[in-house]
Amino acid sequence: MTPTRPLTILIAALGGEGGGVLTTWIVSAAESLGLPVQSTSIPGVAQRTGATTYYVEIWPQPWSALGGRQPVLALSPGVGDIDVLVASELMEAARTVAAGFVTPDRTLAIASTARFHVMDEKIAMGDGRYDAAKLADVIARQSRRHVLFDMDAAARRTGAIVNAVMLGALAGGGQLPIPVAAFEAAIRRDGKAVETNLRGFRAGLAAAQDAAKDIATTASPVAAPAPSAARASSLADLERAIADLPTAARDTMVRGVRRLAHYQDLAYARLYLDRLAPIGAADARAGAAGRLLAETARHLALRMSYEDVVRVAQAKIDPARWSRIAAETGAKPGEPVIVTEFLKPGIEELCSILPPWLARAVLALAERRGWLGRVYWGMEIRTTSVSGFLRFWLLARLRAWRPRSYRYAQEQDAIESWLGLIAQAAPRSVELALEIAECARLIKGYGDTHKRGSDNYRLIETQVIAPALAGRIPLARAADAIASARTAALVDPDGESLARCLAEIGSLSATRIAAE
Image (cartoon, rainbow, N blue to C red; front, side):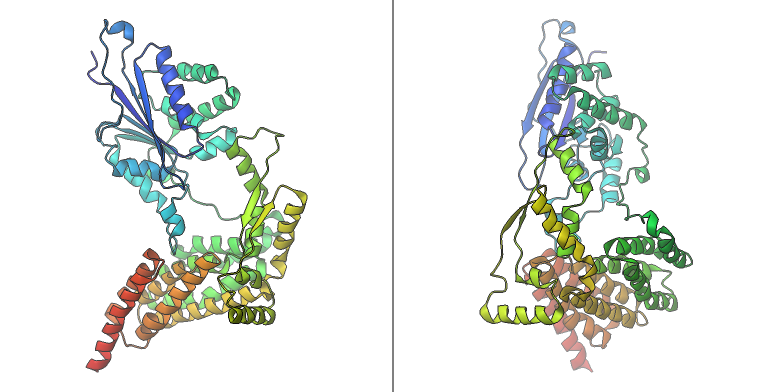
């Protein structure tokens, strides 16, 4: 049958992933078979707000069969006209779906389940991450066929850049009139990191051929830190204590104790379970079937493993991080890699690890002098040097000191207050208690981000949660009021939306008091 249209390929790749080289390989493979082919690219933008897209059109007949005729190939993709999408990141694949390029009647969607968070996710006041399972589900439902797997993991495993894995997945998709051998020959002709790229190509090829089409198998959950052999029995004792709890909360609490034992020690993980005991009792009395316990357990684990200079230092010298950086930069075995950290701590960050009495004195002095929010120390520390490594290593060793620090005392007091509000709300309404638990999303990070989130939480606590628990806001509307205030705080870092929302809720409370 004589073809009536070219085969169209849309590629979405992030900076540094070799999207241009990938396009060159595809064009080279097509040309080696005598197929008419054309490619174009549209540069993306910086700071992870979008991908660079590459567009390839291949006429599925060789020049020799065209009898001198010349096919017309387009320079840009058309909505609803894409045969194959290849994306190195899940959000970028979902964006092409939203733009209308991926369609159920035509498109084979090949995408990585790996996430590299976009700016909107990073700057959100709370947990702004998009649900990876929902993104994958959208891609699966809107495409004719889909192949989803973790291309980033495959690239790290083989030492290749992700573009080689993408090429293998494209070859394994079976949509193009180009055999595997032609793609491998294109890599060899390129002559750069041939063996490494071939390993990546074959990993992508195998994954595409073996990938299950059930979305449940394509999810990419983050594994909780596993216990070390030296303390496995002790952690096992804590995990056994969780075994009889409601199913809805069990997995979350197991992850929580593992996370906190890794973050601090076994006693801190035990404190986590002790704090959840009253919440579990309140959940059972309210007949919540573990919902309240599960949500509180999830947020409590995150709040108790708050970000501080000790945790940052641990992350900076983590051997897994250096391995990842070496893989991402394409460093060969034995090749030196230099890592420089750019830091800008302020007075609050430095005081966070001081004893409470000393930190309060320093902060009071800094506030009188107008230094808070104005005085910072810019630092450039080469982590891969002996002196730089030792500086972070010494900070990481302060983990044992952490329970005696100013920041620790602040966090524990705030956590106990938050848990008390949840326990107080549960007998009145499970939904009200759940909304209070969700307010923990406001508090994250450190420095200015942590301060803004904590300030917003305190406003919501005093102007919405406290009036709701005191009965000054109708119970039927209290949960919605807290949810609205929390959402307003999360979507607007400047606080204007929250101020308007709190004003409206205040009017509701005043009306209730006047009516009484």
